[in-house]
Every structure is written in C-alpha cells, then in structure tokens.
Length: 484
Image (cartoon, rainbow, N blue to C red; front, side, top):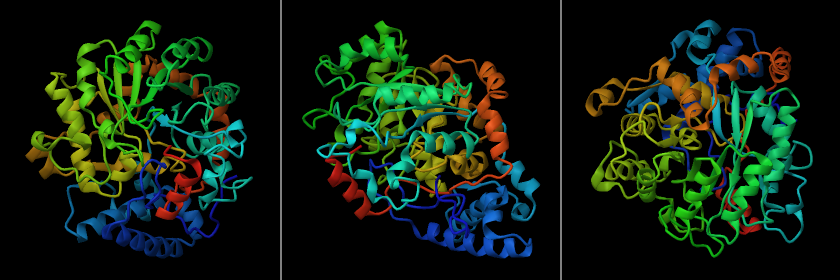
C-alpha cells in the first residue's frame, strides 16, 4: 500500500517537480512556491477552525479547493491572470461549494496510463532497467520504490483514488527484452481488471518500433493474440539512437499501411516532451499533417500535443512554429487538415505541467480547441508516474481561460459540455466505443462496488512517483542506460 501521509504534509493537488522520466524535472516558479506556502497555511487555519485534522481536511474536496484557490491568489499576486480556477472563496469552508466546483459524474477515459512489472524478467542484473526505480523517494510500497509502479498500485490510484471510468495502458520505448512492461504484462493487468467484471474498463496498446527489423511483421501477432486497441510509437527512438518520421517511405509509411491492413487504425505518437539523450528533431510534429492528409481513414493521436516544457507557449505564431504545440498546429494547417478531422491532441503530462502555469495553460488549451478542434482534444494523464490523476481531473474541472484571452485570440470558453467532451466523449470516436454502454456497465461492476466501499474510508496517497530532482533523474537514466 502506498504511503498515506498521516500528518497531512502532502497537498491533494501535487505542486511538485515530478516527471514521467522522459524529461528533466522543471524547477517550480515563484508563484508556485507562493501557492504551496499559502495552501499549507490555509489548510492549517481552516482545518483548525473546523476542528479537523489536517489529513482529514485534505482528504475532503475542500482540501483540493483550498490548494487551487491558493494557486489563484499566488498567480494574481504576480499579475498572471490569463487563466484561473473558478472556485468560490468559501469552498474551503463549505464542502457543497467545493463539490460543485470540483466534483462531477463525467465519463472519464484516460488514454495514457503506465505501470511496470516489478517482478518481470527485465530485472536481471545486466538489464539497464534493473535498479532504475530504486532512487525514487517513495520506498514504502512494499519491495522498495519499484512496487509503487506495479499493476496493483496502478489499479488503485487510477480506478479507486480518482474518478477515472476507463483507461488505456500504454507502452514505453525500450529495446526488446528491456521492456519494463511487455505486452504480455499489459494483457495480464487487463485480465486482472476483467476479473473484476471490468472487461470494458482497460484497453491496451501495442508498441511498435518500426525502425527495428521484424517489428512491423509482429503487429499481426499483437493484434490477433492480444487484441490491442491502438498502436503506440516513439518517432524519437531507434535501435541505433536515430529516430524516424511517419512519412518515411521505408519506415513510417509501411507501419501505417500495416495498421490499416489489420483494421486497427488508431496510431498514438509521442511528440513533444524530448526524450533525454535522443535527438529532439523527431519530437516535432512536422510529419503529422503529412500522413493525416495521406491516410484520412487513420486516427493520429498526438501524445503530449507536441508540448515542450522549456518552450514558452503563447498565441499561435506560424512564423515561430518549429517546435512545441505550434509545430502541431502548423503541420495540420500546412497540409489542409481542418479542425475535428483525423488528428487528435492528447494531454498526458502536458496538463500536469500546465496546471502549474495557468497563463500558459490558457494558451495551450485555447490553441488546441481552436486549431485542432473541440472534438479532438483527448484526456490523458501519464499516471501512474504522477500518482493518482484525481488532482489533474479536479483542476481541469475548475479551469477557465481568461475572458481577455478568449476575446483577443478567439479561444472558446471552457463550458461543462466542452469539459465532458475532453474527459471522454472525444476519445470514444477513434477508439470506437459506446459511452452509454460503458457508463451502464461501470455503474454496477465489481470495480464500482469495491470503490463504493473504499470511499467510505479513503486513503489517497497524494504521492507522485516519478523523479523530482536532477539527481534522481540522472540516477534513473544512468542505471537504465537511456530514456524511458
């Protein structure tokens, strides 16, 4: 079981530097430091006035409301008002107001989840991953920190400690034999969820490294034996350290054509977040619009939306669009791909990082809604690297783009209808699922029953599991021999 922080030292909205292991931890800005101080002070004050322990208060929805209100206060103090969390000031004291702002009954389909197999054969002494996770600070999950990344913790953090209805278990780039989560492992996790009458709750990706000999041919086995719902690929990765483009006639095009021939026409591509130690060039989105135009029957889901943490995101500038989210927008525009077509933007890690900067969040979400389409922005969290995704869900429920930015740049207001689309309805189309059927089945399966009992006495960890310091990151990188 994950540490439960009995003294209430962890905030329910995790304002930390944790990464998913693909990028260096980003230092917290002054407004975020201020927000953390304000939140801790206000939690102490409010819990004392209400006669509650800090831990009890933080487990309530008012605890999350207090933290997000502190974010508003801190960023306003620095004059950064491009976006904000719409929460009544009294929500800290009145749970009903907090629930109205941060609660919800949406269908939430998280299309980017991860975990590892702590007992897999990849833990042999010569494998680069063997000791890689022992440097993370949460070491009381069982057999060292690595247990925090197990299937059991994934299921708990995602399906019990958050409002997530359905998820996709995705893959990470690694050479064959070094996979911390093989497709067999992923299928075993899906089987565990299936055994809880949740056969509709967890889908799995097939990992494809098309620049590795034999990988394209192996796609048939992944589809037939494991019933993968989509393909995951990393254009930055290659067996010799060199990536590829999706429109490469010798690599990318045969990969896409194979996916089409197998009838699994959903391709998820890591773009943006630079994989440390690999050339950033193939992280940009230049090729997305090209292949989307050539293959209109294929859904191209751009993981991370091309977001690059070190790049300051503002309004879309086609003259400065060589990287970041703007590279995605430019690619679809240059190739005549209109909004709400066959290119989708996914928010895993992107929203987690943008939560710490509401001004950039307003621009990124506004641009994606405007140029990629309100029907084509998809929910993903990159959990379990960041622990439970509940704080990401709550923050998105309350976030609003400032009216001045909406008027100046044509960004839409984030309405309840638009949030519902992003949370799950949008992803239902490319994945070909019936949301009404899923909602009906998830209302009465064993997962729902277990969760109902659990929520009578919940013990959320409020923990992030990824590396939080440069030292942790480089220890991780050194011992596994390369990026995730």
